[in-house]
Image 1 (cartoon, each protein chain N blue to C red):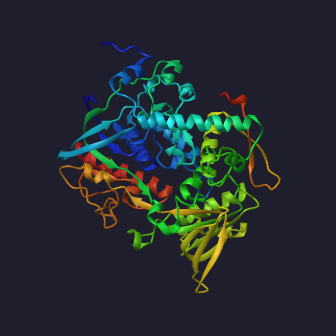
Image 2 (cartoon, chains in turn orange, cyan):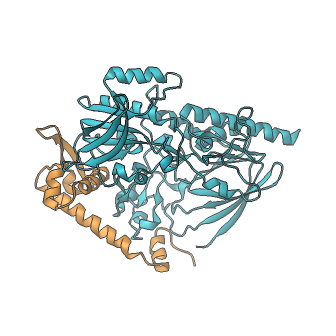
Length: 96
Length: 434
């Protein structure tokens, strides 16, 4: 049977299911992404501020925020008064 | 998965597409030999393509690697298999080798991919980016890094949710989830082993607390932070995003240390740490950088001057052996070390620590040789059977070694070694036609 170009992912999904932990990881990322972007919609924030609002370890905020920076959802703002932390702000209202 | 079988003929199989393998392949191809370059990663360029700058000239590593990589990629006499491994290499006779090359599916037709990144944008998945050494994320449909060669997308099938968003976004219809693993039988006349090295994993030294204390990173992670294609907006502590201002380097992490099974010097750590210290002084003008060392080995051309330059710039050098690193509540790190000159144990606080990890052998390739054994040296690098007279020669006639597969060495020496391997391969091949 000829598999239609552009629909091969659907074909592979029919051959084998997607493992639960893979979909679970996506759900978690989507939740964190929403949390970070919603917090930034309220105003620019530093990493410690985001960690406090989201109740997340700071190192995890660094990882996720830097990923969102790379994906184009977030951009870098000014430095804080102590010259320690950057503020990060939402880009294009959270749409990349 | 289904397996397809193909048969191909080449003059030389080069295993490893780093700077040494690339140099060998290019020289051989320029002499008219047909070369198959097999690379296990999704891009050629090895570790060098991911570096920031090189010592002692501070030239941009990517600016040296990319033209070379592009020349290799476009050479009519070089065929490149990325995402592939040479599994079974058998010697049938002089100038007669056979190899089974396992090609893993990329799920993208490389020739049709324009590198537009629309699939990357459409992919909803985010996982740890191995090319940023875990510092940030990447998508499951992704281009490994911006200067990758081929600059084509790949699908990380392990983390893909098969939603099809990438396929719908792709303007050239080059994504193909029907691709399967392929075994290719190749006939060659000689082999160049350029499989490079592994970096020491500092998790093997629990007293340094790497992995637990988030502001301790490896030198390769710092290399990524200093590179133009860096993971962060600037140099930051991965633990909390603070800009560091007091950075320590711990030399000989995983080198010259019998307790972790690697008694030899890695040859590059002193110099790359001095290089990074200089780059950090430029990137963070207010920062203090301290290097804890046993001996500074600045033996190459221009190396000692480079060391002196770092001292003049204000990098502090402490002759000291670090015993233990502990984390404070604010994420800062306490280094307990033996001040070798004063003969006392001291403690110092830093806000970021870089572990200058050493060079370990990549032994895997020796298992691929089935008929004759590819001998390893006492430290498990590929043994050079005639190191003085014929440094690329291995225990198998017709199999040559290039670059760090034979032992720790820096970039210029790797390129020289790649050149030597190609010359010795040529001389072996020419003997066939005499």
